[in-house]
Length: 144
Image (cartoon, rainbow, N blue to C red; front, side, top):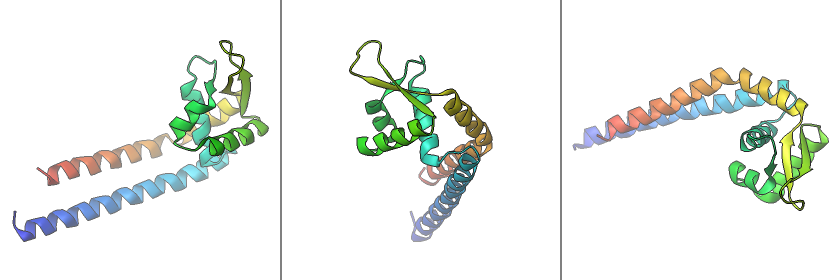
């Protein structure tokens, strides 16, 4: 491969990466604005989303699983949960299988706010997914 071709590949990759980062920043900014309309922070939105998807059976999810899904330390998740409980979005209950374990699940208010934000962010998720696909497609084309 000639130097000019390598330089063109690098420029193309820089442009794709910049476009993707712009879309990502737009997504994060929009998420913050939309979640605020539903009385949530982006972090609390993520927490509600993970609790809801981890507890499909409705029984609840242990804190340790949330730490893994959110990729946060237990102290950070504990604080998020504590604030969400105080806000009436999440409730703690004993596990039916092990009384020592506390499970977390959304309250009806938590469900409602999560659903509202989820629907309001649908177009932004699609745009971000498209940006991922575009970045991946162009990256593959450039390295063939």
